[in-house]
Image 1 (cartoon, rainbow, N blue to C red):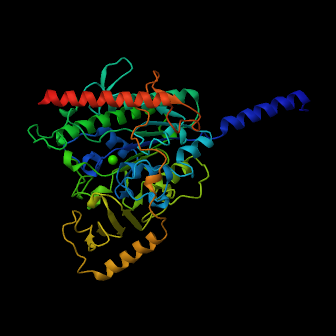
Image 2 (tube, protein in one colour; image 1 turned 180 degrees about the vertical axis):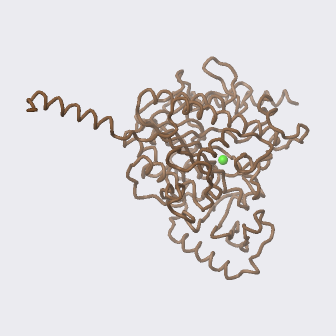
Image 3 (cartoon, rainbow, N blue to C red; image 1 turned 90 degrees about the horizontal axis):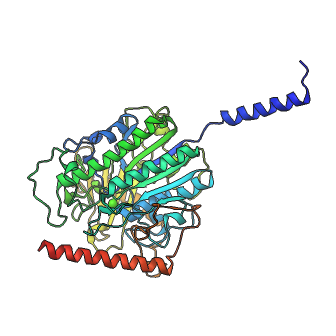
Length: 494
Ligand SMILES: [Ca+2]
């Protein structure tokens, strides 16, 4: 058949349409970054008394990461490191240092934004209010709802002014974002960083606590006003939100095109009964020296790409997720990263550790045990709090609870690991000058603003960098009201 020009044009148009249709759709990426969740508090990691069926289901449909480390505990530096894909010390951040701005190098959200993704964030930001999530690549940012009059952290007012458990609202926002962007047909990246399961759990609704099998008569920790049963309820409410997300994705057949990463910013709050079993340690004083402050539960699920029901025992860090997420989306990686794409290890193509040595260096903190120098290599863990302290050495394969210091028996190992730490440290810049930081830090920069629709939607570049005078006024008034409510609640309690 001789083609007429019109037929040729038609065929070309059909071919173009077919090419467009055949182009593989970029995967969606959802990062679930939990606050203070310990490895001993998730069923897939061995927890027995707090049911986490949905996290466990995610684990069954993916890979469990048993040696996944946070290199910069606690909350603020951990998030900084995750967002930048590096050791935070690379930018002079050696500890909490709230308010230190993120550097000029791009966050993962900025890279996703620049490659056609819709980026969203829900929950705790905690990287300092001189830069809001809307100014660092997140195009849709959920406004943290205002606190309820009782001033308790997890009780918030919803759009109708009703008291609501914050974790449920964070779950609403998560599903809302996915739903909105599924309908738009654009690939999306969601960074879900709920306040859960940070303390205080003093008022966790009983409907959640009763689903745990933690004894009811457990004493209440005086500092936190809480115990494992109340914390357990908080974890159950978190797990419910994971379930809502998975149900939504399953219903819309989105799982094979959605990479889900689950991790925590640091180890458990042992004061509330959080656990890092079989290890020891967490975020409280006297617990920060043990490995449990820095080891968190990790799960990655991407059916069709990652073999299901597997576990990966190699060492890796949460800052590796930056490169992993962008590589999954086939997006070029920026140059400043320490982290690498871990997918070849998670799919079994590569064996062994992603990184054979991991380092910690927290310094300049007023609390002694918030300072930490440590090295993990093979089964060894070497640490000390301050420069003048003796090194302690533990073999985690034989002594996961770090009860038998073997530094005296293995001086050569101490020497070798100390030299490695010293070499790593010598490449780091000095500690950031906090005196001259641009603005004081704020954990949830948007929480005192109250747009009715619940989202700040920008292009991810135009978020405010400095609150306006009116916003400052609103924030001050809200803070004053919260303080007053707290004072009244205290008076009432007496
Ligand atoms: Ca935390």
